[in-house]
Image (cartoon, rainbow, N blue to C red; front, side):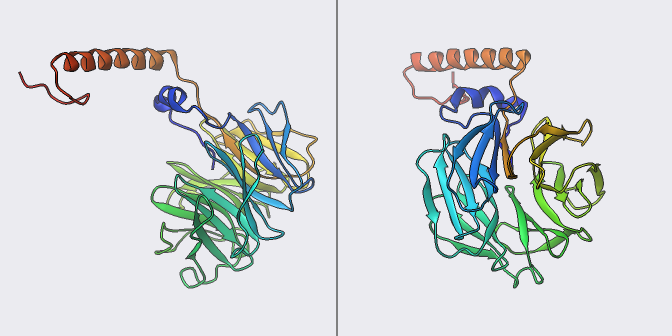
Length: 310
């Protein structure tokens, strides 16, 4: 799940995010057992963390980089520059692959136990959210994405894209009949996923209808992410990261080449505000400041937006 914001919110985000992750592409490399980053244009490839043991899915927050380690069944975290590597969860997981984070939780797909689990961001309070009780037939949950209302995942073995409430209840099959679905990303309007069997990236409406092939020339597409502008994916075993427009047009299968073993990725992209929006926010900020000053002069403690009785 990429971290990006609507254009209208971008000025406020830039003004307040003092320690936010830098825009860029972050990925795990299972050939070099490392975490890498690059600029959004693919330049400036940098090694952030080395010496891992088969790192899997990766997620980037405003303050940390999180990743799963399948050999050893750990969840780990580092600062944004790769320093201060910390083991968050060392027991209770069983071959974790996909992960996602929210403001309060980390969600983890365990292919060893066929479960989806949840923990606090510091790794405490690990609990099962989805098991074969809630989702009969759950076999190999790979990609996972969490919205404000639902938990979504791909099941590699059963060829399904499924959804549940945030507590794991009300499991629903959204898309069935896939071959080997892996990567997953959910936007306000679409479900995106990779199907490594037929080498496709597909898209559907949020209810699973209108399944559409949008990228068909990839080679073993694995992890995917979607920003306000682009769709990114890793081509497993080729040393490449691809990119296309969000509708799949203008695919660049060699967007990044010569990499060792890019596996799972996460993209951080905050759009720059337009000149019109900057003017709008500047004017609204000026008017708010004048209003606060006017209220203060009356010797009252009013909030901005409160009505002043005359």
